Image (tube, rainbow, N blue to C red; front, top):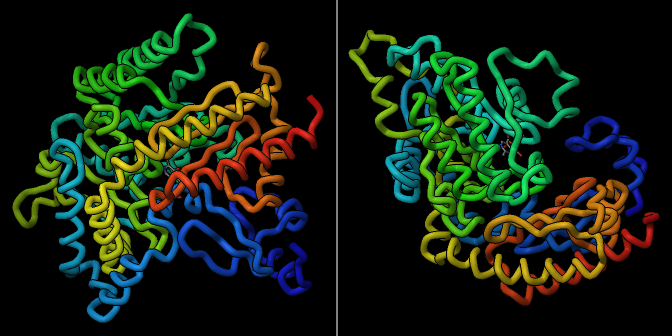
Amino acid sequence: MKLSARHENLLKHTYVDFYQTSEFLEHPLILDKADGLYYWDIEGKRYFDAIGGVFVASLGHRHPRLLDAVRRQIERITLAPPLHGIADVTLDFVEKIGTVTPGNLKYVKAFSGGSEAVEASFKFVRQYFKQTGHPGKYKIISRYFGYHGGTFGGMSASGTGPRKTKFEPQMPGFLKVFPPTFYRDRFPSWDEANRFAAESVEDTIVAEDPETVAAVIVEPVGNTGGIITPTPEYFRIIREACDRHNVVLIFDEVITGFAKTGSMFAAQTFGVTPDIICTGKGISNGVIPLGAMIAREDMAEAFFGPPDAGLQFAHGHTFAGNPLACAVGIAVMDEMVERQLAEKAVRLGNYLTSRLECLKKFGVVREVRGKGVLRGVELVKDTRTMQPFPELGKALKRTALQNGIILRSDPTWFAVCPPLIAEESDLDEMCDLVEKSLADALALVKR
Ligand SMILES: Cc1ncc(COP(=O)(O)O)c(C=O)c1O
């Protein structure tokens, strides 16, 4: 893409997330429109959106039902007075989420994105323990290589090295354990690595003194670590440890939420019910910013009391529960349930995996992993030594764009998460582009 002087100048007056501006200026991408499975840049070049923006647009871009929901809501109310009331559509949204969550996770607060949902969950948990006789419980345990948001709490729980060291010290009270991938080469099997990693969560709770530990937060499928996909037993062990020590289990389902993994939430896919789910991204399909914290309804009782008790959750945002966003969220859930898109994610995911497995012929793929349509491919220099190949991942980012496909690429892995409106023939088109891009990337780098 050729940049005009005006665009080049304007790009120096803003930034693209986690991008060095000079690098972006060399390989710019300025988008003009999106529809269904595709983006178009301002020169008219088309890109297959293999990642739904970034794990967001599961119903594809400009979905008519969602646009219609916005149009109808805009005619009624777009903002309720946050300190005085709540829009009826926001209550409808609360009710609707309660119909798709596992267990009794029905206490819902809508926010404007994933970070806000995560941040609220940490504050909710700390206040919850202060009001249920355990005021010393405040520590949050999370995992290295995880990502929970750009705000200070979310960042402190994140284990993404360089993304957060620039802002340290992190908030006090945040501790980390390693995910199972960290141990996989030290154990004879993946199951055993998972068992050890899960047991280390309880070891940490005990070593810290359980009366100081408030919550464990995990992404059921960890994106920034490279689509880390633990065993169901891993979550069962953590669930039991949390129960034994009165520790709240938070699933950060900002990426895994809303049908991608084969169930509405990955909690259902793995058969484990957390105490809180944080969501964002796919809940709005990217139409209007939206996220939500969803807690066990009995936890909410800790915040009820007589009018002057001062027990209410001491937390709010001007745009929390925004009516337009909630109208879209309801339409997203209706569409997913009516069209059985979680079930479709399993079918598409199986086909996608079989296509991605074919990439092993290049000799640089260690593993294809994930659940449903959320799939990651780990890249190595050599499948005998399993040495990492960071140059390849970096080259792939460029060749993919050249070939007209948008995927999530990292130095040592890449991920795809095609929208659930895709059919097998669309996945063929997408996987052909992935394969060509990987071949082109390999031609650019030395093995
Ligand atoms: C797992 C996870 N949690 C939280 C967040 C933060 O969400 P947002 O960017 O909407 O604030 C992200 C964003 O990528 C995420 O992937």
